[in-house]
Image (cartoon, rainbow over all chains, first blue to last red; front, side, top):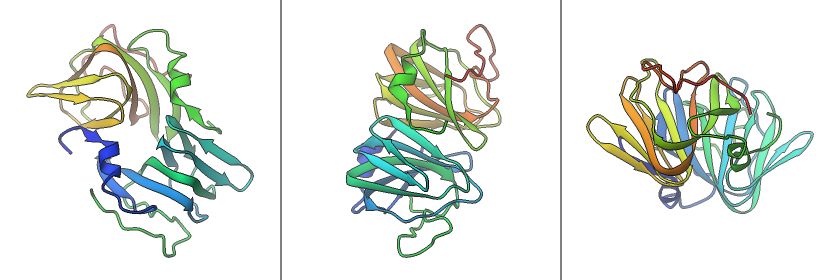
Length: 119
Length: 119
């Protein structure tokens, strides 16, 4: 990544929801874009916080005790160890930042688990 | 930070350019918003990359061999050790992500050095 990264262009390369693409790195963190539509899977990350910034659309981050609602230009960091389940009723575009090697489905695993693919 | 962070609202709390505000944390990284207007100072960070995401306006990240131009929704990561000098001809709003304790002016110091203030 030796030039500007246009996040909307990168999102245009993704052909389906919950198929994340790595667009760059910040030290040992990966910068990831993803389309969200429908409900993801309840999971947590024991070793890291989880950064969400909504670029377009509306994201609900379900926590066990409440929902956090995010629109464009709004961010939330899920603390490490906290169970959460993202969902969106319309296609929503999100920037995620996590340590390299963080599995998208955390401790849950399952069919939505996605590899780290650079786009 | 136990609720959504609206970046535009947080930027509205800043009363001048180059007066950064910490809006949250991701593990040992700080999430910072800043208004950019005019030229900053040439500097580098020996120990960390430097993340810039433009939220509004236009940012030029001057490098010694070229300029990187960023508009809204565009990001760039300055590699550790690389001299850079941000500038903007119009008021520009930026999200920065750096390890806690990173000094905004890096190795340069000077009057634009700002404390880590939570907003």
